[in-house]
Image (cartoon, rainbow, N blue to C red; front, side):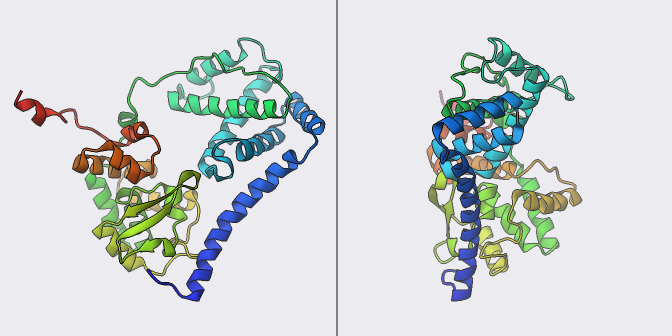
Length: 339
C-alpha cells in the first residue's frame, strides 16, 4: 500500500478522474449561465422566476453556488442534494400561494417558515435544523436571482428561524461501543472486509462518508499508520490509523474499484450494504454520522481537548465539534470532589 505499481496508479487516476468529471459537469452547467450577456442572463432568470420553473431555477442556483460562493466547485454532493430539495419545496409552496418571486410581499417569507415549522402536509413539525436547511436553500435561490439582476429582494433577511431547545448530541447521539463492536463482528462473520473497513474509517478514523468513499489506496500509508484525507472544501489533513483499522486495511488490501477502497462509489450504495448488515444483526440504522460521533466522543474522553478532536475530524470551527461529543453529565465530578 506504500508503493503501487503502474496498473494501480492508473486505477487511482481513474478515481480522481471520476471526481474531476463531476466537477467538470458542474462547471459546464455553470458556464451556460456565466457566458451569457448580462441582459440575456437577466431575461432568462426573470422568465424562469415568472414561470416558477424548478429545473431552470435550480440550474441557475447551481451556477451561482459553484462560481460565487466560498465552497465554489468543491461544494459537496450532500449539500447540493439538500439545497435541491429545499429549492423544490420552496417553489412548490410559492406556486401554491401564487407568489411573485421577484417582488414577494412583506409577510410571504415569514408565512413559509411558519408553515415549515408546522409541516401541515407531513406527519409532524419539521425539526428546527431542517427548517434552517430549507431556508438556506431558498436564500441561495434568491442570491442567484440577485446575481442575475432579476431582483433585489432579500425576503428572509428579517425572518426569525426556529431554534432547537435540545442540544444536537441528544437529538442525534453517537453509537454506543456495543453497537460498533457488534457491527464489526457482523462484518467479519459475513467476510465483508469492505464493510469492516468502512465502519472503522468512520468510527476510528472519524472520516465523513464522502471522505471514506473517495479514499484511494495511494492515500493509505500502513508503514506510518496514517491516511491522507481530502476533506470538505478541498482541505487536506493527515489522520492516524488505529491498530484495528490497520489490520482491517491489510485484510482488505488491493480490493475496490478504480483505485478506491470500495466497489460502491456513492453514499446510497454504501448505505444499502451497511444498513442491511446492521438490520440483520438487529442493530439500529441511523446513517453514518453516529459512527463519526462515536469517534469524536471517544477521542474527547481520552484527550479532554476539543481543539485536537476538531482537527482530527476536519472541523474548521471547534464549536461544530461540540455537536459530535457526548459529554457525560458528571464530567467534572472528579474535579469537584476536592473542593
